[in-house]
Image (tube, rainbow, N blue to C red; front, side, top):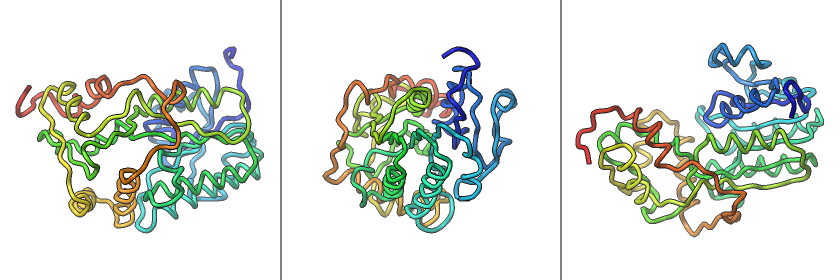
Length: 304
């Protein structure tokens, strides 16, 4: 694509998130001027703001979403974290309904939707059930839609820095349960590539990261990468709920997260097999050395 050429208006939601920020950077480097939909424009750095169109809007506001996407040819839709008390499944589904309405009313030709591994179950996977509902609503528009069913984000580890500083990686998942782990930046690269390419119809593409990992294996990798011993510890669902509540999550958020871990660990096999299309390059070890190690600080209580 030549500098300055665009494929019509591209709208990006959650542009300051782990995935969205990478999408924005790549679209800018490709010579486009994307439209960014976000609640708080002050979160954008000045250099980025000069090169984009900014629409201040909440994705839960139907009319605001429709207005922001008017004239759009491409849309990246990702639900922001659900931060209100209540049912996150219903909350994500409501936002998904707004996306579907915008696609229909504005004739958006191609939408890339940030879904999740487990959405193929359609129900019984906690808050992922809301993403599954969004998949169905977007499919029903008849427009081109790509669902990216992504694995477990490396960046989720940043939410438990206190325990990791003490050398503990706690999880309600079985310690020997393998699952896909992925760097959100790698997801952003796939999103950007798809927004800038031509395709049609309803499609699903998993994003599995470089390899499936158990939590026991993750602890081994982190120990090497951050320079301190980390051990994986399985906790009960009740203890997991207590930890989530102490982190300030609402009752609805807690149950949505607990249901997700339960639904993905009990007799679940991903519908989308690992392939060259689903495997991304960044390893957990390289990510942890670059991002988690600095976040933990340079003075571990006990070096390896």
